[in-house]
Image (cartoon, rainbow, N blue to C red):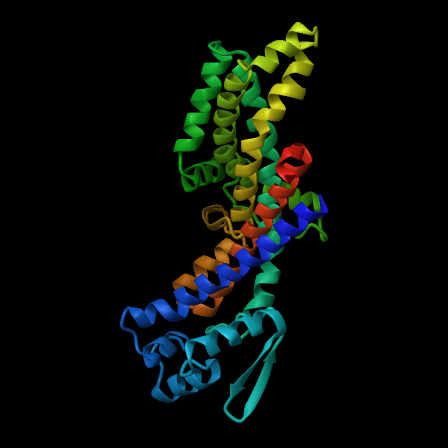
Length: 330
């Protein structure tokens, strides 16, 4: 188990390094390959209608006129150990992880992301609990009651949940149940207000994912219930509940676990449509505002944070695999 853990941790670190390289290339190398000059690239980090003096200052501050390998080294150093930025004769230290300063607010990007993480965490975790329980439960019941009215009705609802876009169901739910809108309340300030304001976004987001998980669980259960070891378990006289929960469901949950890890990792990086629909001040809404303002440091920070959540979620899934199935450790 220790060797397996070391391998997975090393793989996660390597994947984060590769992700940082790809992200750096997208923001700093690809524009040059597309024909942008250093001045044009620096102008994007100044804001709208920059003067030549501002462009030159930005080139010096970000080191855009230095070799690419030096720029990448400074980029990684800023994330790991912080970085100093020169503002004319003055220098300012940006503590790690440093993704630079916003064009609009002139504030470090990382504190802004930290302020919004609790909102996105609250939305993603609450919705995940709902969709995992309801989706898997409905999928199991549909498989056990294949061909019945319940099965057909559940699959019709699941098809609707997968097909309808989140902004449609979100706006519809707001119009029907919360026309005044929702206002995020921190959990530490008012737990009841926190839950009541997030209940509608939770259900709306969970409706989309629960529908998908119900269909996947149903398909997996139908396939697993025909396996030889299921018939053997029944022949030994095990109760049907134990056959379903200890044998069939356990095998079915393996691919569900993989998808769940990726889904929760992506949502922790920002539930863009849901946060925009319900005006929640999370990472997804922050990303939309950054794109609209052409605030590249903010976009860079969101990209790296989302990649980090996906990598960590994949690592957690690998570890859960090892607990669920010891053969994975080999």
